[in-house]
Image (tube, rainbow, N blue to C red; front, side, top):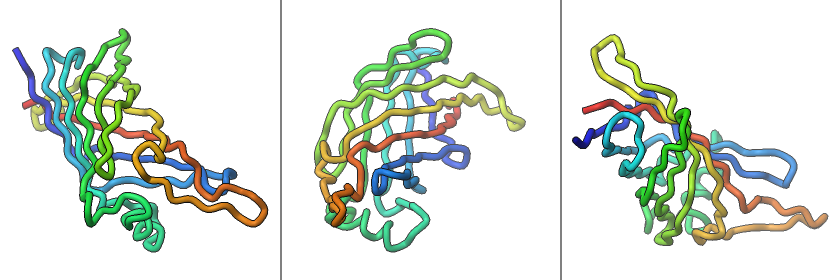
Length: 175
């Protein structure tokens, strides 16, 4: 029997980090996103995961930087308003560790990516809803998706790294 889980966006966050000047990390997040899972049971193995985030909701805490990220130099949110992920396989490696492989589409480019996830457990909240938590992490190269804007300082420092670290905390409600 298939179980459907819908994202509890009030108790979830999608975060990322990128190296700036190769000396520090800059963090950001997406404020508007949705996801659902269709699973055979509560361990999420052999499940189907769908995720979507609105580019216009990107937030790094600096309005000018957010505007630049939404521009054609990066995500081109006017042309490509969403990024999407659709799993192709989910393997439960034991002790709540999952390997999630799927197709990530950013700026019209689709690439296979693999993410690690920790299934934090299943609990019933005070309202009687069954919930499950997932901590998802991974790394992608922004250049793989056409996010290739870059600059080099006079001293030869790369302004923005190519690796994007993904760190997300997701809570789903059993339907």
